[in-house]
Image 1 (cartoon, rainbow, N blue to C red):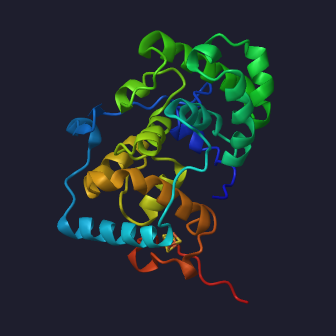
Image 2 (tube, rainbow, N blue to C red; image 1 turned 45 degrees about the horizontal axis):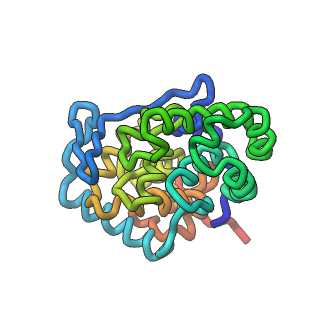
Image 3 (tube, protein in one colour; image 1 turned 90 degrees about the vertical axis):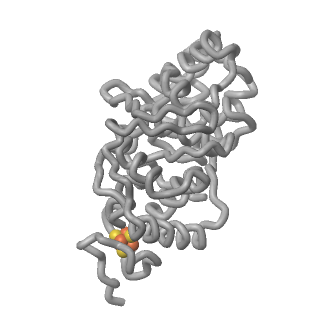
Length: 264
Ligand code: SF4
């Protein structure tokens, strides 16, 4: 999958970077194993109508047709590596992260290795991913937290994962869905934009959008939604110039400012 650099606004949704000034997002979802409890007061989502569910199903069906097999382009062998790679992927491409992580994990393979690493040495290894000082801080404290509180094992639980230093809701959802196939929906700037344009939600807050999508789709679909919507946002429903004239969802789209076909 080819990726463009992440939109700067993405970072605001992804507390995984935890750069100074970016908000940590914690929502009202409690995952107990694979059982998900929506805490209604924080979700603000009304139960969708049958028509809304049907429309949502059609939209996802077309995205599945366009992207039958889709997953993260980050290389990893276990949840720990995916978690670190996802934190490193903020504001850079997956391709760039994939160049860096083999060296990183060869030198510090396990959380306890990285927890004790010299920050300057780690900074030198992750330098090319950008924001290398903050990213080093994030992955070192994440590793220390994992060792201290989870015996070095990444918890397969959204609530527990988002309590780790350096891990936000989007990062945790990506890892849950990708590494374990646990139902989770990661909301980034692409998901926010595309789902709003399509009228699947009118919410702007990522946690509320996530709740709306959870209400619209059956749990078995959750893990496959984000990557498809994100890729569609990159390929077709671009932030500045959506390719509406060739969009397979045009007839389902509520966006009023559709881009006309360019004159040849
Ligand atoms: S019609 Fe345009 S705005 Fe609507 S989903 Fe397609 S590309 Fe996006």
